[in-house]
Image (cartoon, rainbow, N blue to C red; front, side):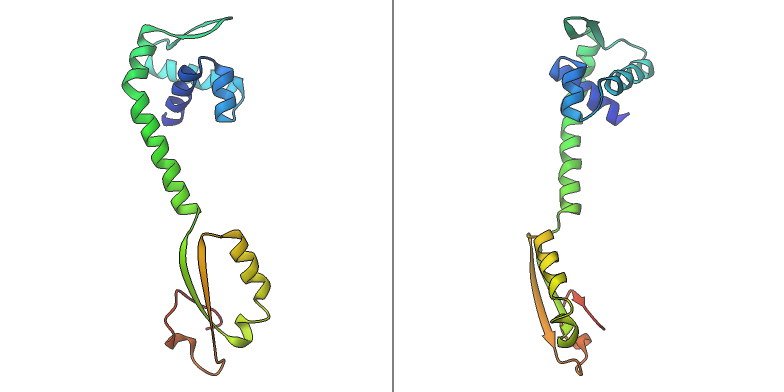
Length: 143
């Protein structure tokens, strides 16, 4: 239902299903169907539809005013959460034996750094005869 609310709010703000569809990367038919589902679940018509576009009904206007700020705030919080989860950043210390961390993994380190530029990668190469478990790190390669 939250997604249908977001579609409703976008359609109300854009003044058309086509504007909402473009903004939300959906088809016009999907936007129309989802608005119809929301109207059916609420038991009210939210829009007056005409060839000149959309206009909120009195109930649609009331519903928009009641939920737009909350749904937009929640949508922004979900976007922020997704960015936090999917866009890692910060320092990362990796300890690896020289024979594994250097040479065989050079391409991996370069690819990793290019894929995650917000991560400050610090690779510590250790003597392969020395236990990497004794080193302080976030990741231990080859242990």
